Length: 627
Image 1 (cartoon, one colour):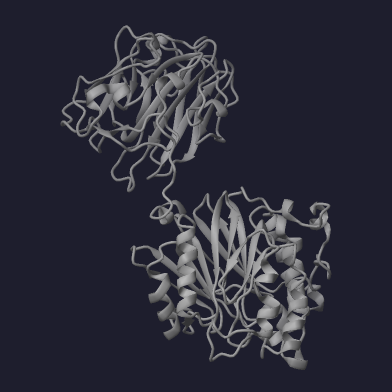
Image 2: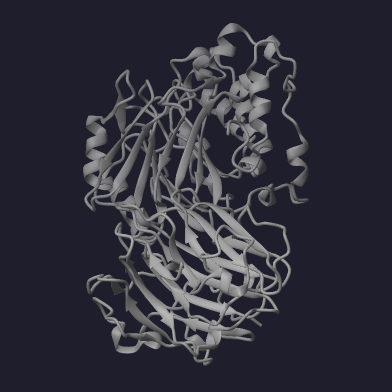
């Protein structure tokens, strides 16, 4: 969100008011100071940034050269941008700012000095990098050019106090920073306008020394854009691509200025992975771009980077006092200025930073007090059948709680062999690193079930002290065919057998977990001690990824959780226990009128039944058994 970030969604309304021409509600002319109240006594605002949050922001500042042009200089817009970043560091969770070069117009001592003084507004407040553009140094030289006014102001000595600073090339014109954001480390490469062979070797060495870090490469020139925002590598950019970027899978995003208009493209590196190439430069816009800032807001939960572009200098003026060109330029919303990138971060980074998955946990670690049944589909649960291929009818899945609730595989109707098969796929938090693939199809009677034996204790349990039933589930992507009302688990029999008539039909079972045509989870249950029926409904379940499902009853009310999150549509009506009638518990389908239909379609991992209400911290996704 503009000028606030992912942790302050309410500010969008404030921005709308600020942009309105007749401002009923105006932003103050000066930046608010309340955001600085959290600054520690040592003067550093580190506590205002949350390195563990999965949402954080990197600010990008392109060419500011027209603001530092001999006696035409005006540092006010840049100072306003820096004040904005400092005061909004907490609510936007700003991790870093990077300048893309051409800080000044001529690189003269007085221009550099004025720019250097403006940057003191960030020193000790927000870590940042600066690189040289062709207007900051002699454009005919590369990073071996030696001493310059730029290097004296923006060389390694400036960045050494920053906690992110990792080092610089021997010439001083190339540097790198290591950020901690989103619960992991990130590498920022800030490369000179014309990097030499020595500079490329240095950059390769930095990447090699940090082989598991995703990297963002910043430089002044790399790509240019046509008027439609479609970017292409420049001649120099092609050299840098061939010499460094293409073979460095860690580099997933490049940022450069120099050219206008802004634009972007996606290139494919030698590993076959996407590299996002972005140009951002607004020096051709009103007031030399007015220190326009671009925010890259990372959301590791959604797998998205949201990008927005605006001028804090204009934004914080009273809307009634803005000139027409200031009002026109305060925020840029074209497709090259405001957009979102979908990046599956874990998948994209897996080639150099494979996720560290937890090791399998034996049944003894997840069968604590109150565990009534626990089934898993690795060798511990099904023995030699947990290898590969079809799981034949008659295969036994042992109840590892030791209570004798073993399940036996059965194919429905005339379902062929292979309808039930073993898989190594699993939820990363599941104790067992295995699952079963159920091939329920569009034919109503196709599928497979795992059925408890006639004397299994779980068949007769009514759960008077409460219960928790957990399962790991994955729906295929694409989710093809008609799988409406397929069952995940249930008890066989009719509600009428338990003298229950308050629900939809006396022919439905007393308890079942199903999926609606819209992929809404439906948990339907009849109480053990009264003719009471309650139904919980989830949101539409996503496909193509593992989910942890949990149904929790505390002897009074039933709550359903998806991935440890409470769903909205849980009835408040009292519901005590389950009106089981002594017929088998089943995984993989639901009966109606004592006939199975629409077998489960997807993967099913560990399933555990506990005879008490568990808190989400006690679910199978944790490393600890129920206490």
